[in-house]
Image: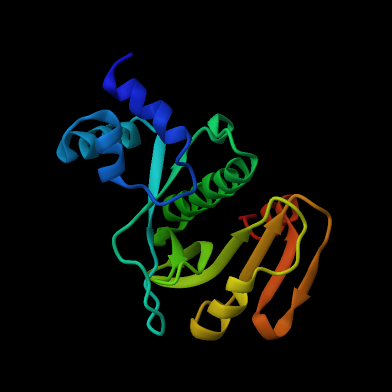
Length: 190
């Protein structure tokens, strides 16, 4: 097995988490530059993609670290990561569709501060957030980080998507909790 093949396998266990090129460098016994180049090659081959952190004005957000996802979300071994990767792939395809059809400058990011509070995704249009998405594998109560960021950012809408059946709104947090299938049909419908 070559280094690039080994890297592809290693990335399957790092889905939905911050990607450390340094940690991969140590696992592969290779230089930082080589591993970074290999990850970019895998991105160009549509094996994986990375998203950058969104910097909000009123929070101390991460600035450099990127999160990793695979284009083929079925390769994810962990069910929670697999669901988050499924959502990431659909959101990125949504962004690409709007760029291609409307000419909008779209970007998929994530929101995380220095205290490890995180919302999985923020969708930007022309550099401004239009909505944020938190993924939960089960139908659970509202994520506490949504409440935190809804009070400290100008993101107009928050969604918490899950695999259950619950669908309700929390107006003071600008948040709707809904099944992913309904989210895809209503929000990602273009």
